[in-house]
Structure formats: structure tokens, C-alpha cells
Image (cartoon, rainbow, N blue to C red; front, side):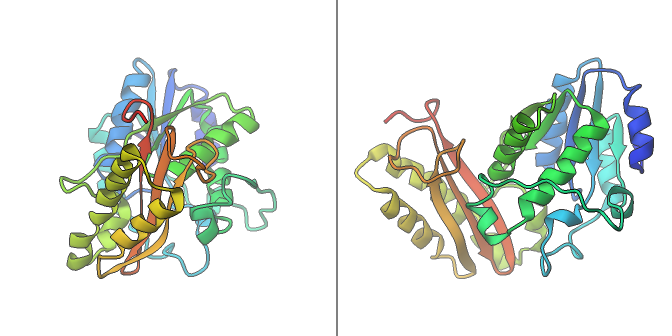
Length: 285
């Protein structure tokens, strides 16, 4: 596996890479969910190039968030990617990605104004900026994103549409622990008690989907039930629990497919995300 550390070197190398090229952008601290992205990339890039990036992007962290303590097991991540069949790894420094006097940015004005965007203003602008940089450098045919971060996935799709990037965004289903907890690099922050309680997040989302299928419940009642159910966990603090349209991320006026049930919950100081997509494949109302 080739390792490239600077945007200049990547820009040159990308022109010579066999096509198609499938890109898996990550912030490192890899787990089985990331490796599922790589496996899907291998299918899409048969005969071409599977590439990954590891970059803890400072532009998407607000002051006081976990930028400084975000896990960075680079040697282990590199071994995992190589064993998974990745051909190229781009691992730049923040200094090489952002000039000290950087002044050009990207701003998203609609999809980021709800859910995680309310608690983390500017976060998705930083996501768009770094993803746009990666797309510019790699010129990928495919880019793979996990469905656990559904708002991020939706915003990246919108950016690709609005800025005319020639890349196909490929969603990959969430990979879960045996008890249902969505795999996340931040799970490592959980205490033993918080880890025992955290699976209530996905159980609640599944329960909410069942309530929608049964009918006879309003959106406000459903969202209230989700918050109350998750709140039974002693270590939990609900940031949001919502029922929205999966394309617009706006509240659903009727609880029928397509619909995204999504929540962000603090377990102790660790903020976890999860969602359940109710569509015509898994529910008819």
C-alpha cells in the first residue's frame, strides 16, 4: 500500500492511478464499520484503485470539542487498511491541508440547519470543505460514506449535486456490535456503565419504527416517547430524537415512508449518533 502525506504529491499521483478509483474518507481510529466501506470500495473499483484517507479535520471541530483527544492509532489503522486491500493511503497534516491564512470556505445553508447542525454550528461547513478538497485531489469515481452519519451523507450528496462534482456517493449500511450499538470511533470513550447503557439508543429507534407501523401516534408523541425511552438510561442526555424526511431532513408531517428516525445522545460526555431508515423496503403503512 502506497502512503502519501502531502496534497501536492497526491495531486500528481492521482493522475496515474488505475481507474475506477473508489475513495473511503476517514478520520482514523478504524473499526469494522470502516472496513465495510473498504470492502464495498473493492467491489466498485475492481481492476482499479481503492484509496483511503486518514485526517482528523480541525475545520469540523468547534472550540471545546474533542479534537485534541480524538484517537489517532495511525500504525494500527495503516495495518488494517493494508490487510483489507487498500492500495493507497493519504494521511496529511493539518498544516499541509490548510494554509495559515486560509480564507476560502464552503457553506451549507439548508440541510445543516437541523439535527447535529443545531448543536455544532459550522461543523458541516468544515466537513464540506475537507471532502471537497479530497474530491479535488483524488478525482474519485466513487466515494463511500457510512449511513450512521446520515446527515453528513445527505449533505455530501447535496454538495456533489450543487457543485457538480463528478463522483458517485455510495452509502454503506451501519455496522453494529452484537448488542446493536453502532460502531463508532467514539465508543472507546465510554465507561463500562455507559457502554452497557448505550444500546438503548438503537433499541429505541427500532421501537419507534414499530410504533409508526402500528399507527395512531403523532410526530410530537413519537419524538417525546423516544426521548423518554432513551432517558431511562442513567448516563444518558438526549440532544435530539426526531422523525424527519431522509432527503430534506425536515420534520415529517405524516409518519409514513420514507422517514428517518434519528437521535444524538450523550452517554456521560460521549455524544453518539444513530438512526433507523423506514422506507418502502422495510415498512408499508
